[in-house]
Image (tube, rainbow, N blue to C red; front, side, top):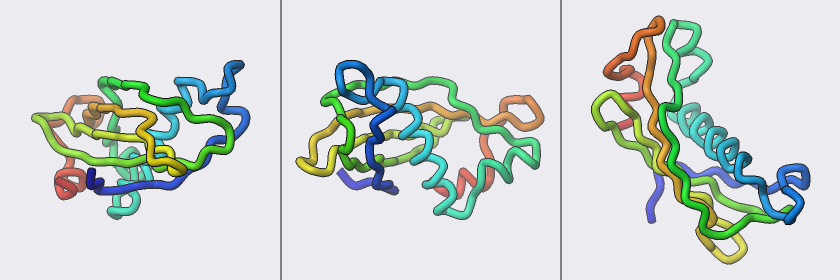
Length: 129
């Protein structure tokens, strides 16, 4: 699959649970970091948007776990995005680099609030579409 953005990352020991695999909550951290880096790579900062009263917040996340990551695994956090109505939908995969195994497939729906009110979009993000 072709992605708009990929971010190389590595599993740290403390991200693993007793079974020796990455705790499920950490995948959300990986995906959030990749979304932020993707937006920054396009010249848009969530912090700058916030300073202007625009907050982009997660409305829904659907994650399908495919194969676990373990301590020391290097992986790619991959991002695609499209607009659906008022939502920015991020399609995100996490792929273990050593064998190109899909570890996680997710859909993250993000909405933007302007001064606390739901907006139909933000010009800077609309340009990414």
